[in-house]
Amino acid sequence: MSKGVIGVRIGRNSPVLFVEAGESDNTVGDQVIVALCDGTSGEEEASVVIGKDQLIHASVDRLVGRVLRNVQD
Image (cartoon, rainbow, N blue to C red; front, side, top):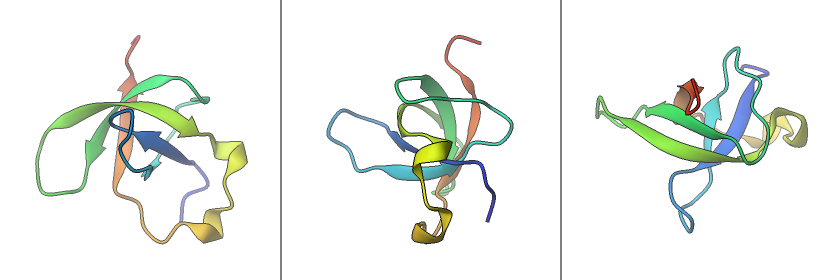
């Protein structure tokens, strides 16, 4: 599993989704665009709620997507 895993929320009360952060250097509170691996080809805006340094990677069963870019980019 990649070392660059972060937790994001699509909506305020949505579940935390674990996604591959890639080369991005996101911190808690950042807004990012993620591509989910749910069969849709869409992109979603999400808030970072768990940063790379806050996560024990062995605790993540599977990743559900990846960060494409920051919203500000």
